[in-house]
Image (cartoon, rainbow, N blue to C red):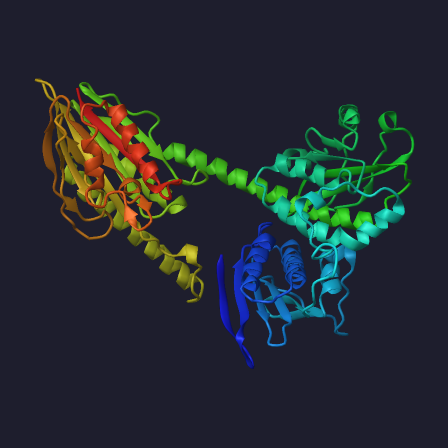
Length: 603
């Protein structure tokens, strides 16, 4: 997210700061809520601004951003300013190439195409319009300041979640009164509520709570995957909500027997739906709305009212708008689930399935990625290398996510291959360093070719070569005939390993050397230590040493060595758990970096 809020001074008023700001937001269901939060924070710094004016501005910002995301499907730019006159102006531009306006200069914004969001804008704003540009269009609105109402809530358009989920007034007259007074605010608040969910089943559940009993006496949501969509089926098992809980189970069984049969194409609805008279009696009406996002059908929403022959037109339009937002939220939840699954599979492929057991050595491992939804930048390995040797590695790649996964995907297999080919510790680091540099050179060449193919135009940020630095602690273990183990190891830009003696003495077991992937033809050296029975070797990533508490880090003043000294006499597992607990307790909150530590203890 690219954003900046720039306070300046209003003209002829040195005591009242003018507010200007810009935000670049991704085209996702989370964009309206993010825009509201940014603008609300900016206006909060302006003394004397009426709450009603702030709330109206929030509603307008939210609906303009929602309109851009729903209809353009691209990232959006939001600009706002509070003018010297006190008027608030907001502009929301999409990044979608647009056609020029009609020759008459007039554009119709009917409900079916643009939804009720722009009707809310028209109701609240002094003026609004659309500015067309070559690369997209900008929708803008200008609001004049108003005072606080003398009684009642601060703003009739400001509903909290309890009001959003409140029961629907009974009777058509009360129905029309609510629709005219608060339906548009209901839509804005419901959008933010749905956009914050990352589980499609929870989105469906919230949809039911939003609709029943406010807009309907019952509703059902069928979610479908691509296979059911291609087959023309309405989706998997229905999720049913009814105003009377005693009817929900029976209604569920009835609806399961007759799932929706969506028409060909991507029409969102509304479409008539057969009334389940065997459960609810013969008098009522039901409508089906196709849930579509990104050009793909995601499911079907069905809702019904008892005792009526038809839904009021206002309710139909409101539900159609709500169904678009439900579809966006389901689409976002599915995208998140897909990414989480891919990340989990990728993470499993980047780490060993099991840690090797070494004769005469006990080991303990702690591995805690701070981002559960993406590949970590930390990795570890402990594997047999043949000829009575075992090798271990603890590494940390610069960055996280796919780029880190690329480096780990290169480094870990090559470490194993080189070790099993008989290369010693220093030679392994030399060759891995050159491999990373060669890979970076190939990436730069590919970017240059892409630039040439594009006619010299700059490539996007993700297309250029990425710096691939790797800090690595790598070692080789050989059990000794008379007990203990010989350890040959080297540290390339990595936190140094610490050796703990049984009497509590702690010393470093390697010397610092350059990161891998930085210097061409770097020559690495190794050092050898003997781990006698009871000796322990602690290897960590910087998620341990750089754990922060205010301005202090865990390893300030040799903090890690002092913590390890207090672990004398403990087993490998107990040492690992003690250090982990101290690191977590030091910051007082969840770690902000990946954490990995390996303890090797001679038996």
